[in-house]
Length: 189
Image (cartoon, rainbow, N blue to C red; front, top):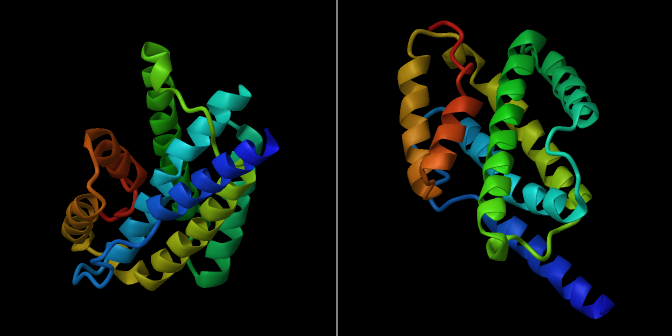
């Protein structure tokens, strides 16, 4: 039985790696591509996290984990010259969008129990991927800080979201989540 569980966990970890792998067009001409793509990859962890929570009976919302994430990204942002209010708002949106995907998955599994997962990676594996992506997002915010605070941000963000969503073959749920996750990226308008 433990061999079966080990194989299932290895398979789920491999699926997590594939889901968050960089797309073929990582060298996009869109200046906000890397930022938006990191946010998209972070959203893609929602399926594995939801599967784990479904199987373990864990809650979708986890205020203690949210606090850890927001404290960590705020500290990272401070060291890079990005305002903590900006980062806190952006990551709150990111977390809310991720939780929305998890709720959608739970709803689908309740409607069709046969489609529910029977294996999932350990939550710590997903959180390790998420923590790395959080760092990438803050790093890209720092790199793109002048553009994010310029009148051209909205057009650049829209273009990057379109390319990333296409590259990652996002469905309507993921496109909506990407819009929600990035909604505060352009504070100037």
